[in-house]
Image (cartoon, rainbow, N blue to C red):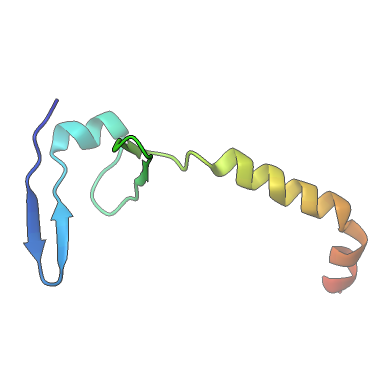
Length: 75
């Protein structure tokens, strides 16, 4: 466990992630991470979008159901 202090920068508060945490996430400066919280006051940091598979499945379903419409719009 790593303690990270909250810092005020302008009108925002930020968390500066140490290099060891960035290495665990496989990320470097300038790359994105995804943060998700729940009702149990738990916050998780992900290197990839944890909901990406759901979003892709929804997009594939829409593309399948409306393939004719999408084909016409692409003209």
